[in-house]
Length: 611
Figure 1 (cartoon, rainbow, N blue to C red):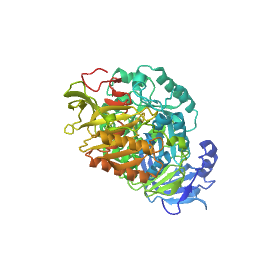
Figure 2 (tube, rainbow, N blue to C red):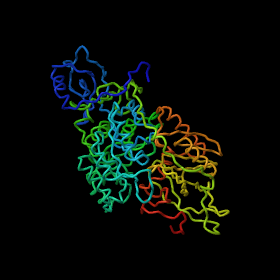
Figure 3 (cartoon, helix red, strand yellow):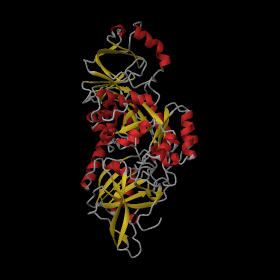
Figure 4 (cartoon, one colour):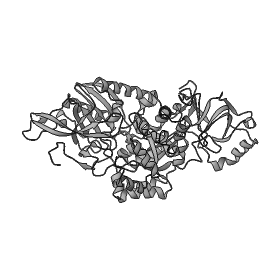
């Protein structure tokens, strides 16, 4: 924050086009001065795919009024004039699918972190807070988003819980809740329909939510996390989802686009799915208008240190995409998909005046960010302050373990008289959301199954934290590389958000779980009884109320602590937080036990055992 920055306590509501039309026409015709004129820029025109030099832009009432060779006729005594100095003028960047909670900060702090990176529009699915606080949590996020100086549209969560019968969340939502939320002013559609087996099976609840959304004329988000592109995929498409961000292979995005869906290609903190799929455009010649760039999940360290949608656009360009096409995929394509083409996504008359100035379309340094006609950031720094949103006290008391846990709670008992067992083991895949279903032979001693550091097999547990039952579900996992006595615990545990604990020491696992119960949620790393790092997340056990920079620094320390314990995975914490997500294959652990997501059924921990 610069000294003397203007305070934005409650941004004035942007007038609709209908309310602004007369003024926009007068400014364009030269009868009225503009509020702001940007002169001498290179216009990145996402409608025509051109870069047009020598262009002026006039802004009035928070909207573009004129874009052409000279806006001298729109300059009056009070008009703010900005010299673009032949820099590129591109639309403000849009994130087509993301979860604020993954940043471990509130919507306000997320906005503060990403505005300097050129993001002026986000389409957020708050199903994380919904799984903890239900419809009230969605309303809190909706109201916070509506008060921001940029566009943050909210998708009503579709799957709370994400997989009924395979997990128990802190709340449950259904078609009536969806129908109610569709009337809220800032709800843009239905969040990702993760229960794809339910849609394929014609589940009345899932289809009822989709129907309620479509009846409101809004967009249904998709989530088909299966490699099967046969009849189940076709049945899912017939069920109504309009987009999908779960593709990881070239064949995935091609199949979706051919069936009339938008393929959302994501580059988050740990999901690297753009490079494999962008070849559909660069090598196979598919129409790029049906591709959208998004992040899905970005933690605070990525936002503060690496960027947001500017990072995704740069990455897409590095894969061989034309710069103007990459920008289209992060602006106009996104706006069109959500029915907002007349509101945003391009620098053209009538649209919201969201714009970035950059001297290089490939490297994409973000040198100025304007949203709704107001300069919000310059050269990587905010030029305004945004007041925090007052989350109620009830949202801060959500971690209910019910008792003090001990090392014995994390012991896996061996079958009677067994000296060895063959166990089903969750296999982590670096930089991808899916896991592998592994089978490993492990030794037993004293009636207990032993972990095996040479095979990189340690334990994972889900601790029930919504109702205080004190339940602990144990399993085995491989891929984190922990090689000393340690444990990592988190109350961010997509999607039901119990507590995930991964460790090599039962005692450290208990200490980690008890520490998070004590602080009301967060992430902690324990090594041999000592706390190496702690990120407190008091709001729903998911978000901090501290500044993004502070949270990022704590998150960096947490990542370093995980590394000190032997984990060298890129963004290992993001991998950790998804290990309970029972809608992405192959194996996951929920509060009811080990789940095979390929079959959507609970399976035994040991290969020869029955459930």
